[in-house]
Amino acid sequence: MPIDDVLFKKQCIGKQLTFLWIPHRCYVTGKLLWLTKAYKATAAWSSFEDIVYEHRYYDKKEFMFLVLKGKI
Image (tube, rainbow, N blue to C red; front, side, top):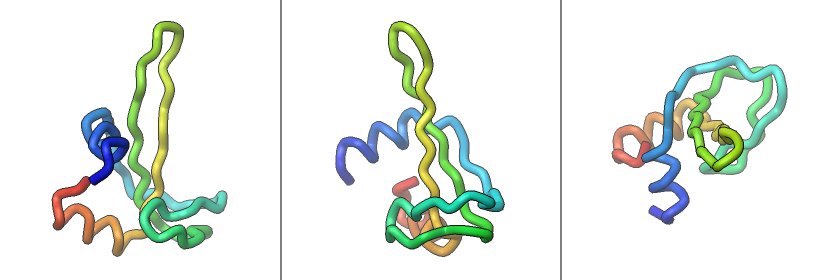
């Protein structure tokens, strides 16, 4: 797991299944996710002036594989 993924997992504040009205790419496969249900993981990064939120979108099947592997 790259360091970026480790930090994202550490800073993750929530995961939810959501319907995507706006197209997004799956973080793992790069597949276009649009007008379907997908998992959205959110991490919060704090800087001196404000809070930055990073969102990653996952296909439902890929998300379950990552959960079973313990990477999310």
